Image (tube, rainbow, N blue to C red; front, side, top):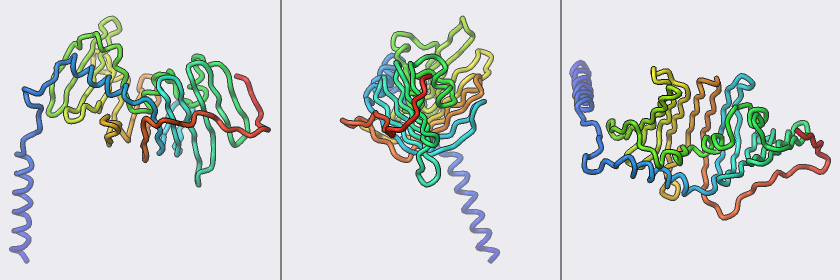
Amino acid sequence: MKKNILLGLSLLFVILIASSCAPTKTIPADRVLSADRLIKKLEANRRKIKTFEGSGVISISSSQLNARSTFQVTLKKPDSLKISFYGPFGIDLAHALITPQNFQFYDVINNNLYRGQMRNGIIQRVLKVDFSFDELIDALAGSVNLTEKLRVEPDGISTSGNNYLLSYLDSANGIERVFSIRNDDLAISENIIKKTDGKIIMEGKYSRFGNYEDVPIPNEININDIANKQNLKVEYRKIVVNKNSIGLKLDVPSDVKIIEW
């Protein structure tokens, strides 16, 4: 028995030593992309996704709400978002349809339909998180919009293991934005905005990537907006992209009470 225990411990020791000595995966020098090519590839991937449908669990934490719900989202980029929330046993709770021009929010429990023109503060009022329309689209699709970076050289580009690190400095506002990008599939795994003194303002983390039409899309998204004290976490169980036809209409009963906001 004692010999077996010693043998087991010896094997465990050898395994631990071998794993600690295993070389860390790095990007071969001859395959390192320039910042220009990297940004173009990342933005091209984002633009391949025209429509997006996902279902799973969403968690929202803000000064107005702390809740977790099953949900379904349908996006038609760049201008349409439908999101539905469900309670236990699939009970309908609420449905929202939002565009840059107008919005509808159907409170199923109270049979009230709130609607009006899109303006500042509406998303916060409806969904209890303070994001712009474009920010919400990107957050729910697990994407990062790099359009503004296409013609701007980064202030820093480096490799760390198997990842690229891109940084952009906004000296006027004392802010730095850093992206961590996986080399294998060019998935953005981190999107961080921080003060030049290192204090993090917003941290976006993306994980459990799946390949959808050769585009890496995260099944888990965590947007921690520290500056505004709000957090949005999404855990997708199913994702479908680029369907020819998607449903972007709210079905409401004829006796619904309409409230103009």
